[in-house]
Length: 159
Image (cartoon, rainbow, N blue to C red; front, side, top):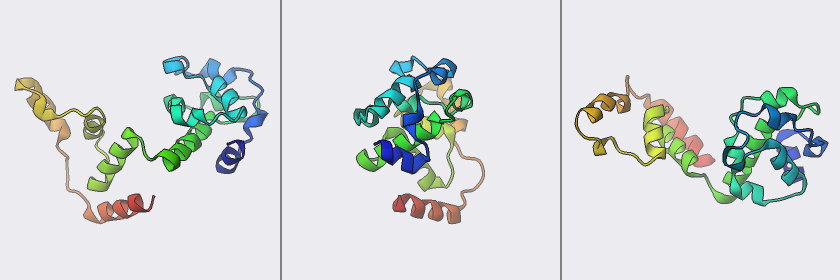
């Protein structure tokens, strides 16, 4: 695990000496048990279960931790590498699948329709005026560029 992360990110997680600067600057620390410091420690111990639990997905990639790290480590880059490792081992998660479906079908991502897919919510279930007020959000504006859609579909199939 340590060598794979080093290969993917160019960072040596063994340089982390658990000072806690990353967690003290993290906006998401404590969310569902998320702590960059604890995750780094578990990674240093070679704990593979970190990948399965996917708690690193709470990282907002704000890079505040990277700015404050005295060793120059970047937890967001490590979190991205962990996500890539998890996807290659276990397949895409629900959010990644929804994103890929959205971009492969249209060539772009509409944040509203993506959120609706992720949370398995249908505008058709809304009733009355409330549904009408939200309906415009799901309607795409402009035309779909089918040349880009085909290019994205090819990229999705290759990944």
